[in-house]
Amino acid sequence: MLKIALPLLVYAKTQSAAQMASIYGVSFLPWLFFSLVGGLLADRGNKQTILVVGNLISFVAVFIMLVAFEIPATPLLLIYVLVFMQSSIDPLTHPSFQSILPKVVHDDKIVTANTDIQLIDNTLTLIGPLLGGALAALLNPRVAIIVDAISFLIAGIFVIALRYKVPTHIQATQNILQDIREGFAYAYSDKIVWNGAVLFFFTNFATNLFEANFMFFITKTLGYSSFLAGITIAISGIGALAGGIVAPIINRHYSTGRIITSTTVLAGIALMLMFFAHNFIMVGLLYAVANLCSNINVITYFSLRQKIVPDRILGRVVSVTRMISYVSIPLGAFFGGILVDKGVSLFVVFLLAGIIRFVIGAYGSSTPLGKSGSSATEKTK
Image 1 (spheres, rainbow, N blue to C red):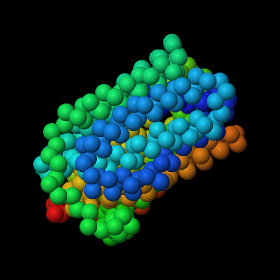
Image 2: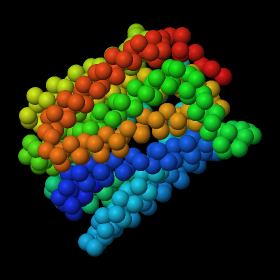
Image 3: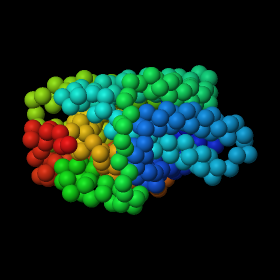
Image 4: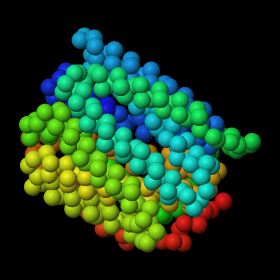
């Protein structure tokens, strides 16, 4: 729900689309600074404890952010700092979340487990914007932030109940710099993993050219209310939900490389067609197709990475590849905001985003990632 409420609060405070996009971009900057730390924590520490503490800190941090918005004299810089601090929890905990999965499910169930996770996430993504938009329109964006904060507390409680056996020995024989170097070296040496990170770098850049300004597009360019903006995002979430349902079926019949690159190309086509969309239903449906494709290739790539990367280094490889792919998110958000402030139509931005995704998907099909198949599903110990 922060995806709906936070941009609206920032726009209400600044009346600037660039600031609206920038606050979105700032929320991803911590991935540049803390991803590697998160990977080290995952490979050296208790993953369950890391996840519990992370969710509880997020619960507190979101409430502090809300208090800052309640004080009219709060400078925008402080808002940026608070958003950055709250967003720092995710890169510190994500490697633990990704690397704990092979410890609690069998290898042949990893795709199914990732699918279940994505289905839950997408269901919440579907409900969250709709609820957030309704709360923002009928009550106040601040109410949406309160509900979002409580969700972190609930998540922390659920993680406490997770059945996880802590390893009796956690490798920590090297110093921190050696551990980081080993993570980078492995990620680069495995060209399937590396090309996947590169593909997602350009995918995220393209997506965030417009996603950071999506609320501006619906409410200002098309002139719809924040409630209808929430409905539009909810419609797009149906595509992501469908992607989670069909991903395991597709993975049983096609090679991983073909799935990842083909869905990237198809997502690019859907985004290019948004150049011609002028009502919220058509925008939502085309965005749903793009999300369907995105969710399929995310599930496929996550499962592939978990299967081919050794357990002892999985947390660091997750953090390295995530950092590489997330570097482009603030870049895309900032660049998209600049384009909008310079008067470039968001319809043109959608077209540009679609072209980028189409091209990187086509290129990816010629790389080791695109050529990866059943031989890449054997787990390396």
